[in-house]
Image (tube, rainbow over all chains, first blue to last red; front, side, top):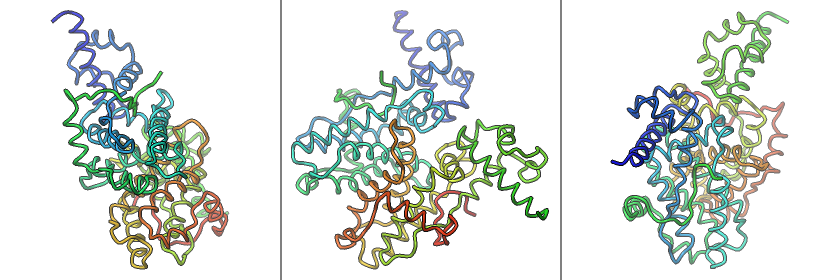
Amino acid sequence: MAQQERAIRTRRIILEAAAATFDEHGYESTTIAEILERAEVTKGALYFHFPSKGDLARGVLAAAVTRESGRPHALKLQELADALLLLAYRLPREPMLSAALRMAVDPQARRRFGTAWPEWAELMADLLREAKARGEVLAHTDEDAVGRMIVSTWTGVRVVTEGLPGAYDLPGEVALLLRLLLTAVATPAALSRLEISAARAAHLYGDMPGGRAEATGFVPFGITA
Amino acid sequence: MAQQERAIRTRRIILEAAAATFDEHGYESTTIAEILERAEVTKGALYFHFPSKGDLARGVLAAAVTRESGRPHALKLQELADALLLLAYRLPREPMLSAALRMAVDPQARRRFGTAWPEWAELMADLLREAKARGEVLAHTDEDAVGRMIVSTWTGVRVVTEGLPGAYDLPGEVALLLRLLLTAVATPAALSRLEISAARAAHLYGDMPGGRAEATGFVPFGITA
C-alpha cells in the first residue's frame, strides 16, 4: 500500500474510533487514551492527523456531512420523506452520524462546534417550496416554520426513542412522524400517493450504490463552512 | 424563623442553585464548588441535605415533577394541548424544569437517573383515549404511538429551538407543533374548536394560582418511583 493510501486509511480508522467513543461517552468525557485504545494506532499517528480532541470532533462532524438522499422522484414530498427515512435507517448503523447528532444535542459541544441544523432546516424548507410550486403542499403552509419543525421533531424522535424502554426502531418512528406531519401539509392528492414506511427506508438503503448514494445535497449533521 | 423552616428554605436554595448549574454546564461538568458558590451556603449545610452530587441530581429531578396542567375543559384535546403549552411557557423560566430536561437528553445522566418519558407518554396516551371515547379523535389513531410521538417531538422542539440562531420562543414553536400533529389526530369538529397559540400559553400561566396550579397529574420530567 502506498504511503498516502495508508495515511488515509489510518485517518479514517482514527475518526471512526473517535466517533464511536464520542457517541458512547459524549465529547466532554472522552479521553484521547480511549480513542487510541479503540483505534489501535500509535499516539504519534493520532497527533499527526489530529493535534487535539477538538480537531477529532471537527473531523467527525465533517465526515458526518452526508449528501445522500432518496433518488429523484416525481413527487418532491416523496424525496423529502425519503431523505428523512434513509437517515433514520443509517443513523443507528453509523457511529459517525450518531456521534454528530449527540454532539449537536449536547449544549456544551454545540456551543463549541456548532450544528448543521440551520442548513438542514433550510433544505427542508426549499423542498417544501418546490413541492408547493408543484401543487403538492397546501397553500397556507409556512415552509420555513415547517422545515424547522421537521428538523426539531426528527431530532426529538431520535433522542427520546433511544431513551425509552422497549425496542422502538428509528425508521418506524420516523415513518409515523412523517405520516402525522405531512397530513397537515400535503394536498390530499399528494398525500394519497406518498409511500412512507420503515420498509421503504430499508429498501432505499439497499439501493445505495456501494452503501453511498449520489448527492442531492442532504446535509443533516456536520459542520458547514 | 423556626429551625425547620430555615432548613426547608436552605434545601430549596441549594436545589435551585444545583438546577441552574446543571442546566448551564451539564451534570457531568458541574462541581459541588460551583453549586456552593451559587447557593451561598456552607459546605456543611449542602452535605447535610445532599451527601453527594447524585443526590443533588435526584433532588432536582424530584422537584421537577410538575403536577400542573390546564384547567379541566369540555374538550379533552384542549386539556392535552394546554398541558403542553403551559410547560412550554414555564420551561425557559424555571431552571428546575430546564435542568431536568437537559439531564433526560444527556445519555450519561439518563442512564444513571432515568427519565419520566415513559410516564409522560402514557399520560398523553390516556388523554388521547379519553378524547377518542368522546369522539374528539379519529378512529384509526394509535393512542400509544401518538402519545410517544408527542413526547418525542415536544422534546425535540425544545432541544433544537435552543440550538438555532434566531429567537424562537418555545410556546410559539410548541403551538405550531400541536397544530400540525392534531390535524392528523383530531376529528374536524374537535379541531375547529381547539385553541392553540402562544398567547394561550401565557394566559394559562397567568391563571396559575400563586404560580402553581392544581394537580391534574402532569409529570413530564423528574423521577417517578
